[in-house]
View 1 (tube, rainbow, N blue to C red):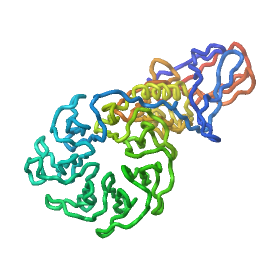
View 2 (cartoon, one colour):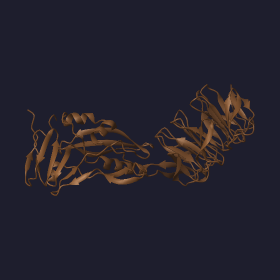
View 3 (cartoon, helix red, strand yellow):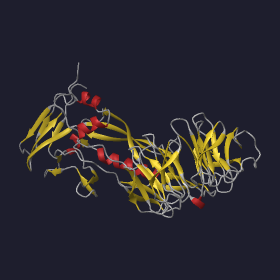
View 4 (cartoon, rainbow, N blue to C red):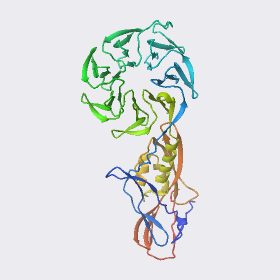
Length: 474
């Protein structure tokens, strides 16, 4: 036999009905995009009961807390690189200490060859190529750098690829930028000339439409078409870069003209900050980081560069590894890591405050048990709370689970995962309420919907109301 669950609602005894408490959070002001402190609409009855009127769907925005750069290793990282290969190994190119391997937070020696201004690229066949300062293009084989033909004679290859690059395009072609010897193509283990243009301190980038762009030393931005370079824009691109982001935008770092965007074949201004010798990296959460010449690490937000950290990252890099960690090469300050612990704590508190004791919209045609089964993702949570997905900084909301609180009538237990891009995952617990205050009649009168029962009080100060089958269906 199903037991009827009964509750006594007395005026002034708010603990017995678990009336929702105030929700304080940050609201976005749509008129000027500023963040202001606000809360769900609240009205107080003289005898101590708080009631909440319906809210419109509002975008909630978390406090803008930035990640912090923390020290990892003090090795000089000028003109260095960090690359993770398919087997999970993480290699680091240093200023004067050769090629290293990053193991358990330490740099371990791999090869003493000078890789200043070099690079590392793994191609589709698994081969790992490394550019060196004065010993040409090398191949990493069994943990050692060897010449392209497999020999180990350091004088064997004198072609300089310092401040060069290696890029594999969608057709399998492997292009190599050299210092003063033009653009090369790696064919059957040998470098063949493509064009004589000086591409030192340049780049080759293939965009999603198949176009191949070349950043040159003195001829600006070029496009490789049938083995020939075609002029695109004359802006000086020494020590520049080109990066296409997930939305299809193509950004170009210039020599002294700031950050540009390639639009309809022309470079247009984005931000005037000097990004000479800089870089751009988009991480798994969509954040776009930019290294500048002397203004530290930035983040591209709404078309402008915002400060993250003032540490000098010129001629550095930013690399996200498979575990979500984000490492930064910081010029003379060594290898650093973006720490999201503070961000995680703030975002967890924000999510908790956003949903704590929020009343859900009770559908009279459904039992609480049926509603609980429906609230399993962000869209269903939005449907029942009228709160849009909160906008978090450097974090995302993961799994959602709602269950009935058997010890507290009128409450549901909400569990929400908050995940930072660096891999920190925390599950926070809070409460939802299914006591839905529909309408205030006057200071002492109100209508309440509990489950599918409508309770009406007309101002009697001492009244007991029995709501049978409060959790009908559970």
